[in-house]
Image (cartoon, rainbow, N blue to C red; front, side, top):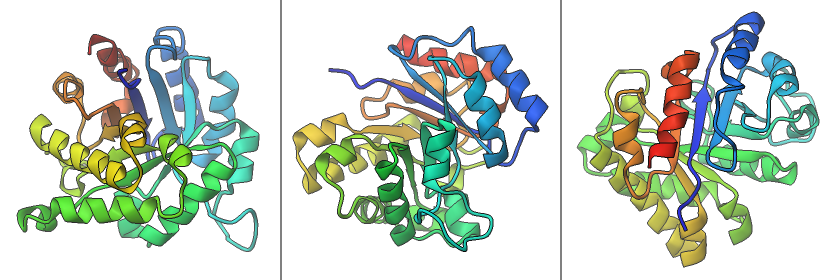
Length: 253
């Protein structure tokens, strides 16, 4: 059976409260049913309560980070228990910007995944290589290693509940996009790695997005690939018309 597509906008550090609410008002009555495609918007922490209050059944709200402890002296961090209480559904974990600028490691990614699952938050787990790693021919080994460390200690049922986002670092915010074939090859590597660690059922159940300069003019080609089950979209998701177009692209495949 075909896996349900998931289209997620990662707003990063963009949008004020009024801009975020305006966006929801523009899209909420036009998005397709969640029975057909999962639509997600991942926003800055101070926006989450306002967005959750205004979301419909056809749109879920995600956070962009979470801490791996229930509580404590972690100034500036956000706990999973708070996100769950707010009604947040998804959380982005291990984005390359977090890894590069805020010292996110494979080990912290693993702990954050476990903490999120404990509070019924659905992790969107980001993996991806630098240009140097790709040019050296080490993409498959590097990404497979990221996947293995991310899901260490998880049961097959927990892994089935994850969404992986393959985001080649060299394609994020650069305007460069992996060709559909390149994206498909690495997403297939991710799926095969999960299969080798668990079983065929888990391998076929897990959803894998592509992220990296996804735009309206390339999303159809990306979604046509067998192992790509959606997209994690940065800048192009800030525009409500673009977001609607890209969500509806999932209905065409």
